[in-house]
Length: 114
Image (cartoon, rainbow, N blue to C red):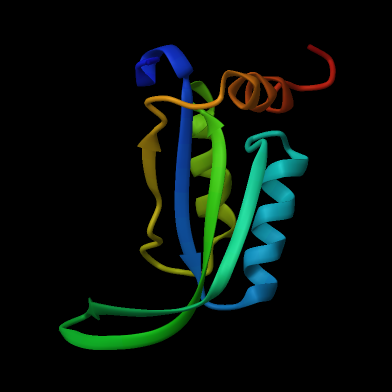
């Protein structure tokens, strides 16, 4: 089994309030090669505390596949595009995976120039 350090892969998640915004973020991050893949799931129902009040909202979940060394740039781009004041941006290390998929992920997050 490969450790997270060995795979150098992350799955990053965030949620947004419209499908249009979710698709815009997904497409942009993949076009910039900050993510090899972006999946949009939803609608989902979220329950959370915000400013002292229990909230309920319809949201769309984005799952982003990236490399650990790209996280800071991905987070910066995501925060710049995100509609929320305090966006959920959580990164999870990939501790193991299909070696061919992990290689594809690494290749697709490299710029075309090298």
